[in-house]
Each structure stands twice: as structure tokens, then as C-alpha cells.
Length: 484
Image (cartoon, rainbow, N blue to C red; front, side):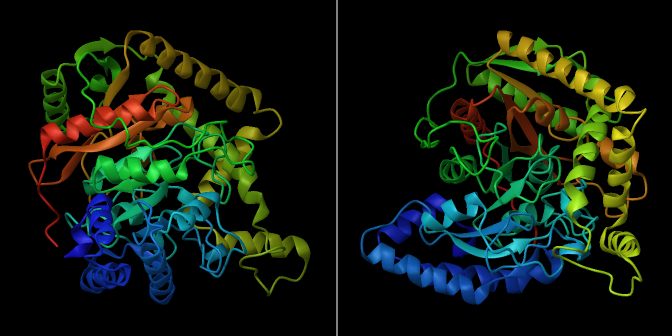
């Protein structure tokens, strides 16, 4: 089955002209037909468009213009703008929105010959950790259909795990690539803030959001990063970094690398026994690869969730003010005046979690509370950044679990927002500091659920971060697949 293969495997077959792009697309849609009614990873599928793009890819291959992504079908999280294809953010308020332009990452993927096969489900406006906050439908974990795929990029992670695409893009504001990657047993990379353009990504929290790849293995994640990373003049926060090939040094040894185990992470309440066991086994594997394991401290780690849930909602309340029924998106037509239209449009267009975060953020920014909440949170954010800087003086990379538990059951946490927020305790600090981090499948729970290892690197350390992840992946050699 072509749908099971990796980007590099398919590229080699295409290069030898042993298969055609149309065959890959048709095989993917055949797989989607088999499992999508169980997994429900997608909001929108673009079969006809994908076949047209496959025909264009074939012309490029025949003329010798093949790149690593030519003819490769990818899924895109539904908060990344795609010209002519609905971009809903899994929200009623944008249910029929069709962008007039492509996000920069989509433009670059298309230039590389990639094929867009659909837009994946997510938590509404990327606000959530389980994809249960989607206004469209639930997405189910391919490993256990009674469990969540994680969030907010749950649709992208589930699609990759279920072989409903060859690779995918997600976005990560507080762990939304890494946590679903861990829950679904795939690789998820959150790049350094500014490495990948945010132009065309529908904003949640602008100082935290970052687009990144979800892939079947570390090499594929490196391939996708090589295409989407680089300076973009349309994004004022884009770093002046030239494009590079992140696969070039990936196979180099990591002997002598200093890896720090974060002491406070092991003291977090509610840490599942199986997560701890897989983490300890992962440390042993990395040690056997010749790395030096050290213990390091992040004294302000315990405040990360509280800081995040002031800063992120504050930025969200500002970013989501544009959805008022005036310019685009859903509008409540029965309103009798402008103010009523604003209120009714937002009341009916937004879901419960989005409303909760808008209210939290507006409160934190309001007169009399800004100093007590937002300013204080910003100061503690700086302390968290400094903790990481000190840790990286002693270590090349840091190690933490991705989440305190494996994938939890659907409905288990949705009515307890605090418990849901705490499921991101190990991923949030990385976004607050703008660092690079990757989730790599590391083992399984007693129930057979995937568990990921999180490797964290300094700013713009993706080359060596991917090298570390590749060597770990190779050493641990997990072969199991979802029982679909």
C-alpha cells in the first residue's frame, strides 16, 4: 500500500518512474474511504484538485524537475490559509470562509510540487488539547477509537497515524503539534519561533503560534521543515534565516552530546506510571548512544501553565476581535442593530472554549487588572526563558515527557477545563521561551497506547535536534502500527 510509505520512499519510487503521482493520490483516497468514517481526521477533502496537482507533478517528473516533495500528498491543518479551499478553523464563525490567498508555507509546498489532499480537523481556533472543541465533529485516535487524538492538531496527527496522508502540517501554540504526535504515535516538530512564517496562519496567540510538520518518521519531518522554514518578508516576526537542507547532517552520531533531564518534570503530580517508565527507558537508550545525561533544574516550570493561560487568552481576545460579522464569516441576520449583531454573531459563532478564553483574556487586559495579571505573567515568562538559558549553558538539549498521560478517553476531561489545561504542562514552557522541540515515539503504555519523548533545543538548533531525534528513533526501532 503506497499510503503506508514515507516521503523519502515514495520520492525514490517516483524518481525511478516506478509509480506515478496519480497512483499515490488514488491510493491515499482509497485508504481514506476505508478508515475516515472511523477516524474523522478531515473537515474538507479535495480529491479533484489533488488529481489535477498530481498531473502537474507528473509533468515536472517527466521533464526532470522533480524535488523531494514532488507528487507527495499532504494534509493541512484547517487554520492555515489555502486559496480556493475552505479554511474554517473548525468554527461556525468561519464555516464557509474561502481564503483569497495561500499561506507562505502552502505557497512553498506547492512550489516544491506537494499535493494538498485536504484540511484536517482541530480544536476551534486551535484552542484545546483533544480536538473535542471542534464545531464540526469529533476526531478519534487511530490506536483506540474511544480515545482523543490530542489537540489542537489532532486531525493532522490522526491522518498521519492512520495513513490517510503521507505527512501533514499543524500549528503549535502550547503543544498542539507535539501532544497529538505523542498520542497518535507519530513525529511532531515545533520549530523555533520565527523559523517558519506565520503569514496565512489564522492567529490564536501571535507571540506563541508556530507552524510545524507531523510525519511518519524524523527524516520526513526534516524534509518538510526544509521546505517550510526560511525568511518571509510578509511576516514581521520571521527570522532572517536562509533556507537549508535539514536532512543533510541527520545521520551523524550524537556521541558526546550533553542531555539534561529536567528535575521538576519528574515531580509533577498526576504523572502516569507508563509515561515515567517509557521516559526512563528513553534516557537509557540515549545514554547507550554515547550521550552524557545530566540533571538540570527549571525552578519556574510550575508556573508555566498559569502564565500561558493569561498570555495566550489575552492575545486571543485581541486577535479574535476581528470576527464581528462585518467583514467576513458568519453573521447573525436577525439582529436589529449593529451592537446586537456583534453580540449575537459572536455568541452563536464561537464555541464554549473560545468564549472562555476571550473572557479570560479581556479580563486580564482590562483597566485595573493588567498590572496584576498580564504584566506579572510577562515577567514570569522572562524568568522561564532565563531558566532555559541557564540549563542550555550546561546541556546541548533537554529531555521531558510530552504529556503526563497517554491519550485519554473522549469526554474524560472536556467538562473540567483545569484538568485539560494541565495536560499541556510539559509543552507550554517551550512556546513561552520560543524554543525548538520534537516529539518522537518512544514506547507504549500497558494498554498499547503510544507515548512520545520530547527533546528540546535552544533557538535555531533544529539541525542537531533532528540529528538527536533520528539517532534515538533508529535505536529504539518501534514497528507497531494502529490496529485499524
